[in-house]
Figure (cartoon, rainbow, N blue to C red):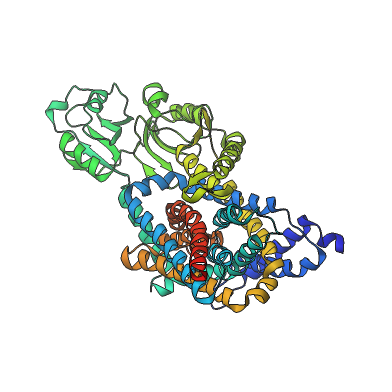
Length: 556
């Protein structure tokens, strides 16, 4: 039995299984969710301390890296667009909420007599930020010696972190689950509003038929009309002499022809001014000479190429009318680069569509395969970025940590999709699995470590340390909520993700994404997380130095 209890593999996955069961329990509609793993690990860590159990810290780090890397890849495609639109707001939320927590930590340390090490460790635990703890330990090393467990200052920071961490995890998860009720709305309504807002930024694609009445177009080819660049809408079918056919570059227009175009309402209105009156006609072809189908992009030979490079219209006589990527429909343009999983709506002769399908698809199984070379290279690059020292005043070198570095690199990769000439493709199912596995590994590792020290910390520092940590957590959450929901009027789901980012709290993000079927929470998390992470990495050592300076001044 003792051999099992000393096996990290057995203990970690037993804790994950039991914690998942605990997290699935609902009390009046509220559950712990993934945080259940942390609390089971906390109890297990306390009892396993007597068996001299030691969990390799690499397991916890692996979990954190997998989680934030998957989140970054998911949010990357939308993050930079959101940053351009609302970058200042993200900065305000991330900086102000974390600053409030840091100031409250300093004030409480002075009021209840906490040491500088306890105050800084408590701030890191109360805001659930491991990279900030690493920065604090680095600051302690520079002032009182090497950061080993034998160093009393380092031990104080570690146990303060472990004492404040549990309440922060539970508080954020429960707050996020209650947010819709607190804001007097429903998660479903918030998800619908978010979808409507996103649709307004990317207008829906529609189709419209026009009867050509402009005599200036008679005798001109479709290619010549497209060269005028009057509209980005795509002309795909034409009825001439009672026959419907797919439009080709050399198709000649005549007065009285009826053409079908696809595009946004604004672009279709431009064609109305050019062609003539709108008619009710779907231009369906009863003879089957022209059809419309959806093709799934899966062949690696076409991934990364633009529609212009593939010359689909010229080579196949097939018109690409729409492109759908991750649920969003786009008007196809010549510079649109194909990505795995893109869905093309095409119009043309059935045989030519089949030929096109053989060139761009017919390898759907590849969509379930992850590009491991760029995936692993991205994780390695993220580790390098996270361990890179960033010089700050007072001789302190700060680091983003493995999680912070992996997240920033994943955001860039999710946006760019490449590492040099190699394209990164990770199926949605793989990203989801990596995120979930990483989260439970991280929670299990953090809980087992904190549980071994929790009782000692409580006995040494008493309830004052726990109360101070809870106050810092509540102050940070309240500050973030006030700015997001009262000042900026953010969407509840988007704000729930941003709140978990302010607290750098992975279980909070999972709770936010479980509120509704929407990626609003992930986008909100990714938007605020970099600012919150970096600010806490800076604030935590400053809390330590400031409390230490105030104590020395008071002693003098």
